[in-house]
Length: 377
Image (cartoon, rainbow, N blue to C red; front, side, top):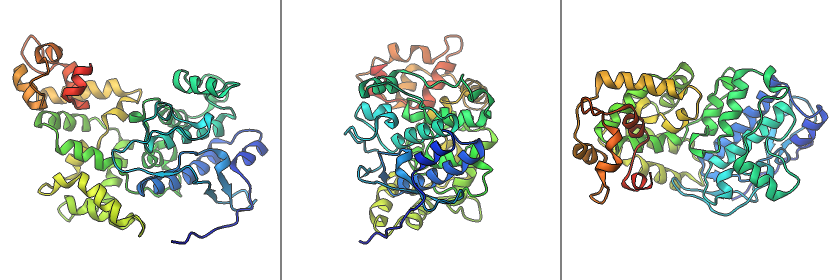
């Protein structure tokens, strides 16, 4: 396999930031972010995690202000399969994600690094700082970045939200590269091309294997989604190529991977991801059910509006799906093993007044449960 080499004469992104006085305007920062996210979304689709994203590893092709940006230095990059976790600590201290320090991470670690770059672009300082590497690591694990000092109060709420959703210490709540491209802060940018987001394969698989009760809960949650989230899901649904009746099947998921994979990755990636959604073999999803299947509860939970989403979803659930249920039946619905002390761990899931699922139980049901997670709780 050969790899073309391109001479980049424009210097590092870091040098360009410094030449601008340490930061970019919002509009100029958007242009940089779209380019960074586009290449990272492509890499993640192919199963490649860069693991050392920082301004020094992005070069401009020329000294022109509108010069394209290229990612370099893939020396620490690695291939990662669906559900696989990496465990070696690599990367540059200021940009390393918390889960990397915990030695269990995936492509989400790159998104943290992009969040750090976005923070620097917009305000000119690092979100986590210390004189020593160990001090930086402590800050990454324990400290929260400041959004109170200038220029943050004068920046748009979309810009602040964008950075916050990338710098979430819980990797499950972090935006994917594709979701970041679809974020309201960037969505109006004329150069944004949104590719297939592989997180939807994982979410659809989890949905298919869920109990009927959890499917009902997720359908209720999907009814609360705001326009930006629905726009992202509609784009993703369209990329899967629904038939004339508006349905998608296993074939659509398979073709979407095959169409967008490189020749080198095609065989392995198609197999990896089609295996994930193989349970769809005899199922078809319309857009409404796809929304329920492809919504990430954890990512919604990372938003400031999560409480409103959950409360509204519970209201829909009360009307359409809530019913009296015995603890034993609920345990069976959840697929819990006999070793779980169900009357202890599920007691606050059910309302004592009418035997229906409580709000607490509803939210926990949305997240999905297992015998292992309940025993940890």
